[in-house]
Length: 253
Image (tube, helix red, strand yellow):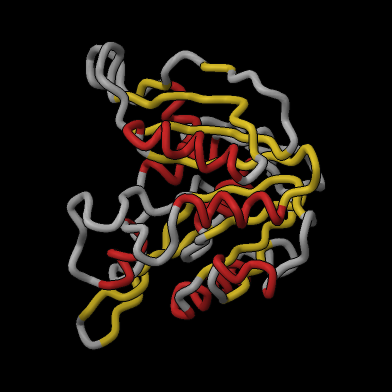
């Protein structure tokens, strides 16, 4: 369902799956992408886990996690008040205002927003490109979501480390060409890379994304899983991509 004002589409509402949770996005803010859905399928979730989403936008990633495991509490941190308002509307529409909350603020000031060591899992779909690199959109909200002009990779990792309890996990999606930068930033914040999965369109293709889990206080040792392929040889979505988009029934209603 779209909400139209003055002939312009502002809000778009969709369901994650038939009978599932509804999410919202705004053309001027954040459009849902495959990277968010893949990240939503990546963390190992336990009932009762406390989750923080850094740069939570309109709340899609939190809803993806809650669709998989309803017994979570997810706290988003988002700079743009317009996105926070949409996240709050999505939480209310899904009856999840007690499990999906969003704090408006700058993750670089995380100590003023949330207590230290209060979360079991932190997730983030951060800006991919350093300042001056990559093709960026003209609109400022979309530019901030893609470029590190608003927050650097090091600042995202530092915020995650502050929020996590000892032994807690940080899961994020990023670009393969930033892997060395990412591992350095994680270790500098006391987060040890533990699980890596590269994402490619088809088997044999160069990877286009990576999914990485780091652990606060973890011992050295990185498990590199087989690549996640989005299409099979005939160009059809793989079972793993279908599962990430809830085209299967692997959810916990």
